[in-house]
Amino acid sequence: MPDPPEVHTARFQELSPTTLYGILRLRSDVFVVEQNCVYADMDGRDLEPTTQHLWIEDGRGSVVAAVRILDDSSERSIGRVATRADHRNRGLASALMRRAVELAEPPIWLKAQEYLRDWYASFGFKVSGESWIEDGIRHVPMRLDAKAP
Image 1 (cartoon, rainbow, N blue to C red):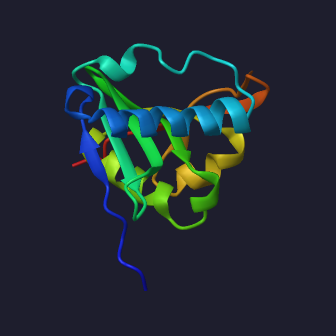
Image 2: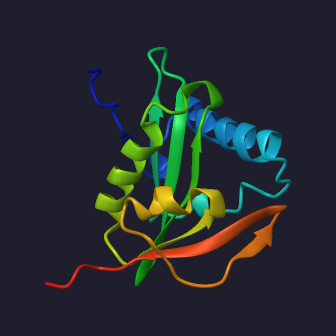
Image 3: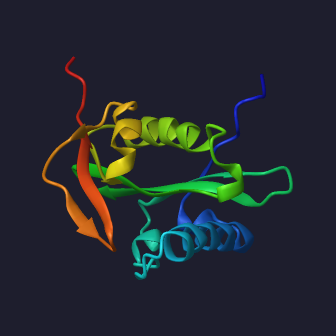
């Protein structure tokens, strides 16, 4: 059984230029090119001092999976979950999500592509509203609430 992947974590100011480029390139490759979602990925939220970036690198130091956590005071959100096509089905996104949930602490919300609803549910997220179409892809809001003491 292979070792679990190392999940790196940093705020924007702590990212090296090479890592930042790798994260942005991955998101562009997955969302803009592969999924044909033409939107402004660089929305300014990456720069916020409370935003956390998580990523996994391959053996050559290239970013192959990434996610970000946004902090909106009372709630956090997880988004921009992306894995390079040639590194999928290896548990990388699951490793990132487990770590993101640990760091974010509920309540946490996300906008899930509907076909991934069950995958997000495996981390405890529940559908929290009606679905909608964004960039031609059906999405559903999901939320992970704090566990009762």
